[in-house]
Image (cartoon, rainbow, N blue to C red; front, side):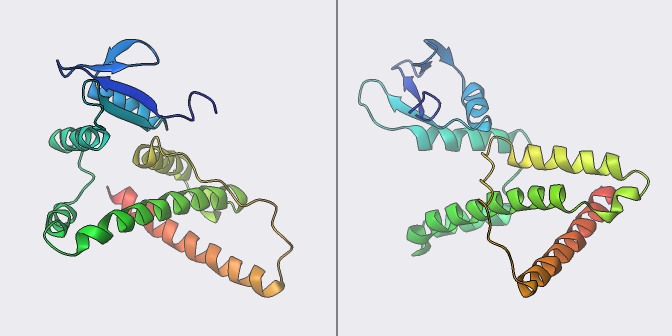
Length: 187
């Protein structure tokens, strides 16, 4: 196991300073956010008690970004999260959120694969290249630091029905992409 496969161990001292055990220097919350964006897992522990403080610090990073106006979580989602603490949803919510983010990562990976394999006919439209670059920057920003999902290994030959279904799926994806492009151009 290489060093980057293991979580980066950050120790919190009594002074609340955060210490990177790999580089032997102090780090800030923004430094930790940068490690995570680059795909590195982190673990933050209290030096004295050994308590795992990772969740607390990750929530603090999210809260600071939200407070700076870098809103990712809509108010209705935050409200539902607060409600989940008072209902039976508290037990289900972590699994639901993890599954949702897994699906998001998988969808992003498939969309990128499909765009590479099946070029979009809109490529000939004037200004399409600039729009495509905007979308790539948007996806990179939105999904920044999330490791891309692995593509399918060698697939067996498909039947004509499967190929037809795949063609319909691709047409669906192209339609959705065109709608997204139209929305983005309005912004």
